[in-house]
Structures are given as C-alpha cells and as structure tokens.
Image (spheres, rainbow, N blue to C red):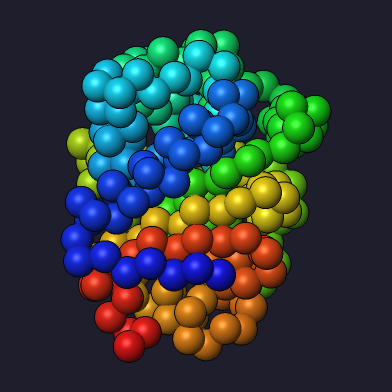
Length: 243
Ligand code: F6R
C-alpha cells in the first residue's frame, strides 16, 4: 500500500488527477470506477482542465460508479447520476453510453445488482477504482455492520450516513433511506484502488487502515488491506492520527 500525504485537498486532488490521467493516456480504453461525494470533486475539476487544455481524451473510456440512492432518477439534482454528469461527464468528451451509474429507479433490484457486477466482469474489470471513505469507514455504501456484502446490493443507510449526507439536501427528511452499492468483493476485484481522504473526521478510520492494520467489518475501509495495489492519498488532517 502506497501512502501519499499532502498539505491540502488541492494537492490531494492534483495528485489523484495525475494518476487517473496517466492511466487514461496509457490506455485509451481504460475502465474507471468512480465515486461521488465531496472528496473527488477537485480531482474531477483537474481532469476537466486536462481535457480542455491538454486534450486528455476520454472518448473510449468506460466508467462504473459505486452507488446510487434508491428512488432518485438521474434528473434529480441529488442523484449520483446527476452529480457525475454535472461534475465530470458533461465537461469531457466521454461517450455517455459508456458511463454507468447504478439505476436508483430500477424495479427488480436484486436481478439488476447481479447484472451490474456481470457487466463489469464482461467489460474486463475495473482498471482503477477511485474511492472516498465515510467518517464511519463506509466504502461506497458498505456501512459498518456485522457482515458486509460481496456483490452489488441494496443497503439501508445508517443514521450517521443519512446525517452526513443531509448537507446536500434541503432537509434531512429528503435523504433516501436506502441505496444500491457495489459490494466489497466488487470493489476489491478492481485491478488498482485509489483512496482519497481529507479532513479530521476521516482520521480515525484512516488510523484503522494505516496503523492498526486489522480487518474489521466495523470499519469497512480496513478491507483494503486485502488488496495488492492500493494508493492512499490523504491530507495532513486525515493523516493526523497516523504520525
Ligand atoms: C460516494 C461514496 C461514499 C463517499 C463517502 C465520502 O460514491 O461511495 O462512500 O465516498 O461518503 O464522502 P465525502 O467525499 O463527501 O466525504
């Protein structure tokens, strides 16, 4: 596991965009696993800049997103599909048909979840999975629990996560109570993982990953210890309990 510590989120974002763009330049058909949330936004802005100023070419790139709220369609500004279009896809030359975000309005969710994993496998697997982490250690929407799912599945969000995500909604009552998420197995099958974490509220779960080094379902982030190729980019605040 490579750990890179930066002084601010700007440098975390720049470093992350450098790693993603290197892959896109080396493999024009790369498959990216993407995350929403506030952490990767700066990296997406930098990728947009690279596209506009340096001609970084996304025309043959495929993307698979980690998760989506149940009940929100892609036109809803709080949906993760809307987020991805708004923060990245609408500003680069990606083929929208090659961008996959789980469908929060699908009827037969269990079949759909299996199909999502199959689709990723058939495409050849994710080359680089970008991850953020929740203050409680959740990865995608795999929340701390007694057991974690292997495949893509539907999950109930914890009160902590509903609270944390309410900042994006007009009121906490509007935050959906469930979501579709890639499972831990889906995530760990990615060839390379790029974890981004900034801020003091991530320090405790980062300590679990980088200092305690024990796998526990109480901190799903620690499952990254099982992956052979993880790069962690953090700011000083997120790293503060690891010194
Ligand atoms: C988003 C996702 C979540 C976020 C996590 C951190 O697709 O899967 O696990 O990565 O909630 O969110 P931020 O970056 O807003 O702190």
